[in-house]
Image (cartoon, rainbow, N blue to C red; front, side):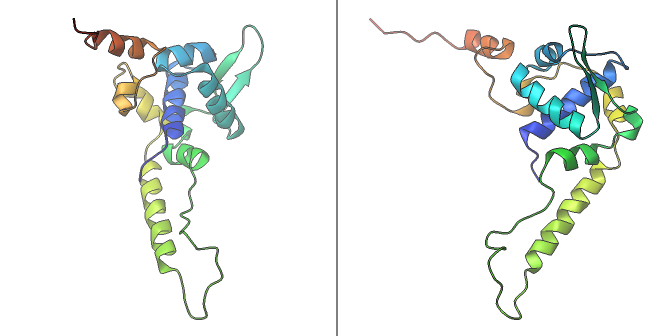
Length: 165
């Protein structure tokens, strides 16, 4: 199964907050440190707050922090909150013919649940304790945005192509 960028970003945001050890973290800081747009971070923080993973404090001195102890946040729970966790087969909603079943749907649902159950064996605390290194968009094999640090670095590394004379 391939997770969405949103889920990857959500896990990275939670790790960032876990490493802050209860201190409020500003969305702008998260966006800068994780090389994401503030708009995207706001959207994901809202989702994580509604799911009960983060607590938000408004105002000039506000920010976000974990709403629960990192050892109580299972990665599988984060995936359930950010992904569609039911496999829909194309045409599944169409009326079924008498005696015809959709066994593939059950098999895929079972496979998805097995995948998530492996993630349930790991907590945010474990992930936050892992050696910290710079997490960049290149780590996710995603194209960098031109207006970001990694985007500017890539642009600077490209050979200049100009008209030949």
